[in-house]
Length: 597
Ligand code: GLO
Image (cartoon, rainbow, N blue to C red):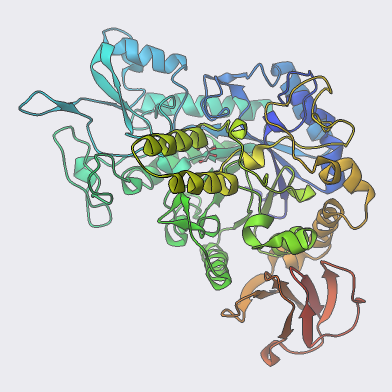
């Protein structure tokens, strides 16, 4: 199987926010077609489209109502076929984002599964995960287990008409399908083959390590819990005085996960020249990650995985809303561990910091970046494009887009953020105090998922549309307050812009295969503000030195790394290139790539 994705640069498009061509305030597939040349100019090879399937948009498309139909907000199948054809003509590949852990509760499978519980329609009966209530002596009923869902309250939702609960790892309108059922799995393989037969180049597989759930009999030392009469064990108590408990070990990396993914590979991906990019936002470590990317043809599961340690450094116990300060050496350690572990396993890493679930990078990784916003965005570009792995950028990252600075309630469109905000309000009513609400506002401004979903500003012609939509239409989310300077049109004309820098970095990476394939080694691991590493490939040596701090710093190239280092790319142009360096003086968020033969 070929590995064309290794040296590729992936561009993630959140279609709703990319480019609107029909004036309804939501982006669409024709908008993507319109911007194909834009992506070619930037140097992109693969386009990842966030879910485009029919959906009630409870979770912006990560709740599929029909896998075989295009969401009418985005267009129709003809638009999709055109997009695929025009992308392929330009040498661009298209991968589709697909959620196979759950569907929308509007999916016909779910409706038929509910119906089946009343009799008939056997085939669909076990398409979802149904559980019986646990009833105590006083005839009180409780859910089959104490698992807490990722978005809202209990993971089990009661359906009065059939007196059963269904399981949902994410939101209540996203029931999990039952991968234990071979018929269900076959239906999913059919879906994947349908799109691959059309010519799509692969999939980004949402929440792919959540498919196998733990039952009583699967409890063991790594998966502690308490058996219940329902067959589903209770997770260990981590938050006392509450029924619902964090349950990552109960639904992530479960006992049959590798079996399922091997089957998916054999039944689907092995038959196509297609990329499988698995998202693992719940409970993945480098050691566990290695097991998903085995290269042995009989064991093969996924080509690439998306892991989250580097974007969870600012969370307390993995809770995205509870923020903590972190130090640069922690980031260096996390990144280095993944770089090394993926390479050791004979696999390939993914390099990314932004997506539709994460806030913008500069405000996050370069603390107090207001002093050097432009440099910070460029620093992050050097960093990403000089690590080993497939680089994935999120729309607008190439413009250096930032999070909105102020909290505003009308900005809350995302279901996860909405629920969090409602809970914070309910707490207030119970006497939680204003302080808590202020904390919630801060958390939402810096971590809420709407921040990076703000529409792309294409030009500065109109203050509410920014070229994203018709001047008379209202974008589904307000555009960025600094759209006039951030917009693509202005940046593409400007040789010193973030956009130009991204384009140049993509080219540079291609000209220097060592920056793609070279072995990675961290240098000076304890330095509090400098992130430095080498990449070595054949006879080519690269040294990358990045100042993640807001102060000037002097950094001496350690003797052990030899002499003769010549800078080939800087974030700012104040120093002439071409002189050998032994000691570097870097301004706030300055970065440099050096080379030696
Ligand atoms: C992250 C997904 C996210 C979805 C979730 C449910 O895990 O990208 O956007 O909300 O997975 O499908």
